[in-house]
View (tube, rainbow, N blue to C red):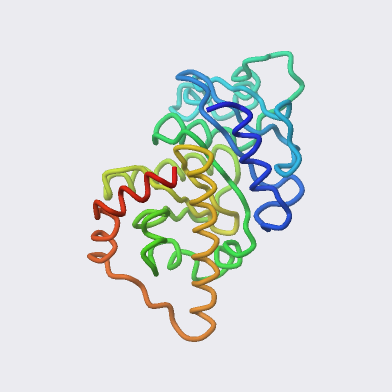
Length: 247
């Protein structure tokens, strides 16, 4: 996968017609190799970003920060040291730590973080965790996984990365595979994709699920699939095959 593919994904996510991110909202990243990744620089607009708007970062300084080998107070120093081009004026997003962690530890190749209105109207409500932990229809299961990781509001930066890591690991322990969707209370949506197309498809399905959930709440109570039905759909050979075609 190339930086050009990340630019294309970012433009798709930042298209005003999709209502996923406006102005400087959201960020994206893409694994470049075993040691580095591309991440949107702070202040860039997803809808108009060029390839020059991404910073190439090293995993090592950021993982040292997350693993306690650097003091939290050295965050800004780690952000500067992680830049492959140390002379570049670009600053990686303040959320670069969770991008590094999800790419390095949870098997993602692409991260898409947005603030969709349809999703955030739920994440800013008392029903946020209910939406995250349940599934309503088969294609939501197929693309978004059997559950989403729910993260209560945390300060962006290291506090958010630490809490996200803890909850993503709990998900991995329960389901035996990394999550596809992480929902941040009062904040937004994170998708872990295997390709830019995969990230786009999961984002689109999560937004659709949010609209269905809000509609179900408006006319009564959502009716959720059972855990047995979710597991059956998610592991059906035909659905596994179909899911691979969407990547």
